[in-house]
Amino acid sequence: MTPQIALPILIPLLSGTLSLLFWRSRSMQRFIAVAGTAGLLLTGLWLLATVQRDGIQVMHMGSWTAPFGISLVADLLGAIMVVLTGIIGLAVALFSLATVGRGHEAYGYFPLMHLLLAGVAGAFLTGDIFNLYVWFEVMLVASFALLILGSEKAQMEGAIKYVTLNLVSSVTFLVAVGLLYGMVGTLNMADIARRLATLEDDGMVDVLAMMFMVAFGIKAAAFPLFFWLPASYHTPPVAVSALFAGLLTKVGVYALYRVFTLIFHHSPGYTHEILLWGAGLTMLSGVLGAAAQFEFRRILSFHIVSQIGYMILGLALFTPLAIIGGVFYIIHHIIVKTNLFLVSGIVHRLRGTYQLASLGGFYRSHPWLAVLFLIPALSLAGMPPLSGFFAKFIVIRAGIEAEAYGVTFIALLVGLLTLYSMIKIWAEVFWKAAPEEELEAVPAVEPRAMWLMSATVAGLALCTLFIGLNAGPIYALAEASAGQLLAPERYIEAVLGSGIEPGTAGEGTP
Image 1 (cartoon, rainbow, N blue to C red):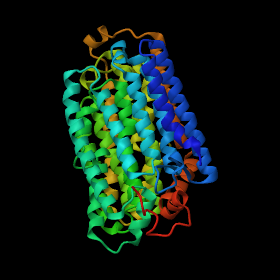
Image 2: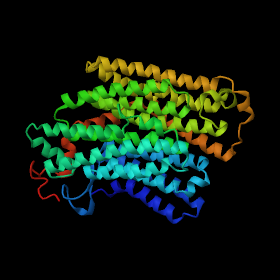
Image 3: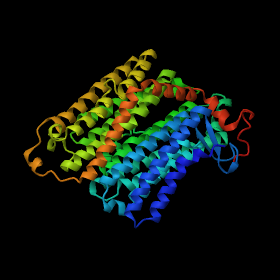
Image 4: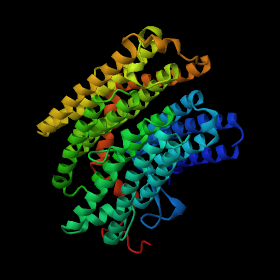
């Protein structure tokens, strides 16, 4: 029994509850936002250290042992994702202090932020397939409310596309869970994996694998059902965009990694070939969409799609090096993409627009901001010695070793086109002279607000530099995580114990 597994879920839920209790106190809500997200980060680090030291940690809720009760499970991948959730939560909370107005706070911005973080952490730690669905729905409710906060026309249009596709994903997921339960009689993921391993070849297993692939692929914004993301992520307040960009699609990617390494790993020649095609098309469609855009956040939104392709590629290749690359890429991308959205928020705060044609001159007027943009931008493009270089290098090397030359060429091409997009933003926002009319209309920003925004962006830029300059330890962490993913029996034994015989573990499951 490891009670600290529940803390990354309980702390955001408690923080959200306290925010509601202090509804009329703006200062208390802001204090709780920072304290709650800092607490989430600290408990995430504690959990990661525990998993590294003692192995996979399990907590059976209500002392009902698996598979009869609900289990929380923390392996290295889950613990890493919780730490990243804490980093992004704290960064967005600090940035929100400077950018979220009284109107949005009055509509419940901070309680919704905590609810979203609880849903994300719950998805990373649950060991029950139905509760994974529940946490997905918690995220959907919170994210939809944050997306429409303010009820502007553009927000409502984006929200309709967002919620429609995500509801399709949720229905597909729920139907797949029902069919899977009807087949194996259990909802515990470790027990499902053990029971499926005892079944003879069954076409229904492949059908279920495809249903989960579609459901999680939509959540991850993979090809072809990715268009809800660039249609919606540029519409809410920038702190919300950054939170979404860093975490939401990665929950879908995490679910793909969890399900296709633990449950549906028996016929990788079939399922992973489809994932391979999906990865290549996701990379291409995302980067080509970004190349056609001239609005700061829309470019970044399309690049979320393209970078998801690299993460799926790591899973699709399904070799130890590829899984290492996929985990490394997730770590790198969550930090970098959140930071780029926050940089766009500073630009908007200074000039009042995200349109590249109306921007310019920041290299001369705000050289520090130009440097803070270049670090995550060049990392996203894969320039050494930043984190993105090592992430791309590992995935591409895995592709070459697996002789997947076509998709490896696509990954290299997408890296070049990503660099093109970052250069376009640099040239339009930072290098060219600012339009005269825009220079006259620059709004004043309070020094405290500017300090908060700048410190947050600088902190995430330091994280990117840290990952790049300490790639060896991060690689070792990703390697250990990949080792657990590729040895599902370790997860099964941690949850169910070694004394439960296959075929009897789920008897009597309600």
